[in-house]
Image 1 (cartoon, rainbow, N blue to C red):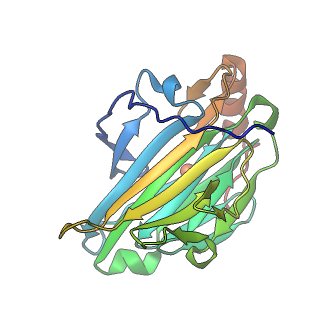
Image 2 (cartoon, rainbow, N blue to C red):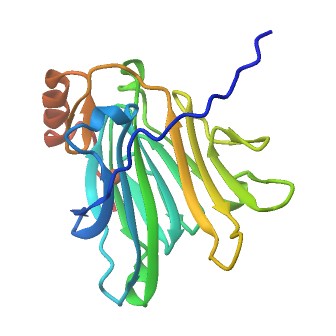
Length: 245
Ligand code: FE
């Protein structure tokens, strides 16, 4: 039996986030996509919403919009988000909860701050990652995995200086409950300070590159231009679905 060796790797580069508006006009910090986004294969997008303290009426979300060909992973760190979709799913995400949505052949969904939250002051903070699907899974039936914070495995080093929430993959002997279509690691580490600094939070996200052609347009990510045109036609003609109140 061969024991895998762990070889430390050097940092290939550091990338700054760009501030951009999403959905109905809420500000996010976005490290990618950029023109050279393919270097992040199999990931398509990373957004950090907030942390921001909102006044009543300021919270905006992403009303009804489609997705096809990839997965959206929403991780709520502060505030509450409501979601609804064309397949009849609906739910509320609280701090620490993760929703791993495999859009596959397509859903139309809405992602909004919870209605009560929009009427009161509140702190909103969330992370959204888009994970590309391999060609064989792009038109799979949509599915959801909603993992409440209490069901996300947590592990700690013996000296308790490092805590990790295992959202996908494995770390410090703990294994995630979420199933991914291709091997993905998504870990939220909290490092305790050595002196008087606040604890440091970091996300470690890793995956095996798909090495397949990517053609993307807005909320669609497929392998060919013809498939993107098909996705747009399917959405415009109502074949991806719609949300009923
Ligand atoms: Fe969405």
